[in-house]
Image (tube, rainbow over all chains, first blue to last red; front, side):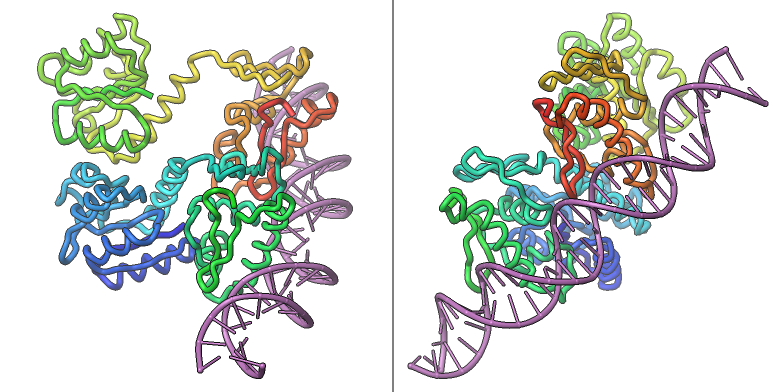
Amino acid sequence: MRVLVVEDEQRLALAIKHGLEVEGFSVDIVHDGLSGLARATDHAYDVIILDIMLPGLNGYRVCSRLRAAGSDAGILMLTAKDGEWDEAEALDTGADDYLSKPFSFVVLVARLKALARRIGSRAPRRTVLGDLVVDSAAHTCTRAGTPVALTPREFALLDHLARRAGEAVSKRDLLDEVWDSGPDSDPNTVEVHISALRRKIDTPFGRAAVQTVRGAGYRLAADGG
Amino acid sequence: MRVLVVEDEQRLALAIKHGLEVEGFSVDIVHDGLSGLARATDHAYDVIILDIMLPGLNGYRVCSRLRAAGSDAGILMLTAKDGEWDEAEALDTGADDYLSKPFSFVVLVARLKALARRIGSRAPRRTVLGDLVVDSAAHTCTRAGTPVALTPREFALLDHLARRAGEAVSKRDLLDEVWDSGPDSDPNTVEVHISALRRKIDTPFGRAAVQTVRGAGYRLAADGG
DNA sequence: GGGCACGCTGAAGGGTTGCTGAAGACCTGA
DNA sequence: TCAGGTCTTCAGCAACCCTTCAGCGTGCCC
């Protein structure tokens, strides 16, 4: 679960980052509205935590521009003080939820998880790539109509690649998203699982959906290979 | 899920509309009691969110007239201020639930979903999966025509799996939904009951409707196994 | 062409996950 | 209070999966 925090108070931003990382989220920080907008548009975040009072471009504007740009990330607004800004306005501009400062960290995590769950349910249930079908809800995968048995890790890996089909996804990202692992995790782990995945969904069918992008990671061919 | 919002504050009504649409509800708005009554009677809404303070005809009256007209929509009342109006009166006139302003949007959504669930469950429900039949209303289950006796927990478990037939449902979700248990409840409880369920609806018939999805939970085969 | 970085893969152990029988706690109705 | 059924907890076991390691092949740059 990838989270972007847009918050100009350094201490608060860092505190949120640390706390969320302990909870298993993968967190990036930026400190003003414009950087937030830029970063959110060229990285695929699941949830964006957005302060309203920001230098440059305020939270409302960032939010509405993101929605205008077609972003479907979950947006959680931080309002500076209860009642000072209109929460309804936050929701108006396309936010999914809001939280009044000061807030309890436990509440933030709870809301974030609830939001993540809702976002997750927006995601497409099934991804079809040629004759390769990945069903996230049922946790099943079929190739040319034949069911393919995958281990939990293999499935999670395939699922993440499928959600970003056609894109090159780095091993780092995969480690973060599929493994929730720390910064010192071994990329070879990904390689081993990719290898196993190929042996199940590609080799027996003489196909090559899982493609290596040297130096950049892996890509799942949008047409199934 | 179709929702009608009867609320005279434009901003609030719009905010609710936006927020609920994000959640996948289909939302219409009217701004006074009479229009609310008219619209609710000639369109089939599942839930009506009804402000009490309304120009023309207040919320209580709209509510009781709707009930008098035989409407079976779920009605969620918005009371202007905690205690100022009697919530009991809201329920008296036929409302299903109420919420005091100002309310958190998250709470509204939660209440709405709970209400929608209750409304949905008013209708008798039967799930047919191959030769396995689960009747939620009658609390009965038959396999290949033979009735199967289940304990309350076993039935609740089967029922929840049946409602999401074909999907992998996590032990966590099952604990939340079937057991309403806290965050530190034991997944083994689910395992034990799954085991018991299999012994009753699968083993004697040489079938396998209840499937284990390692690392993800359980799935009830859409074809009965 | 040589050297280096990157990626692939088979094997093995250690850890995790899920299953199940049994026992005791709990609830309900008589 | 007692009896019957039901639910949860516990512990042992089996199967499975993940990671690590090491060796090898391949592509890239000098």
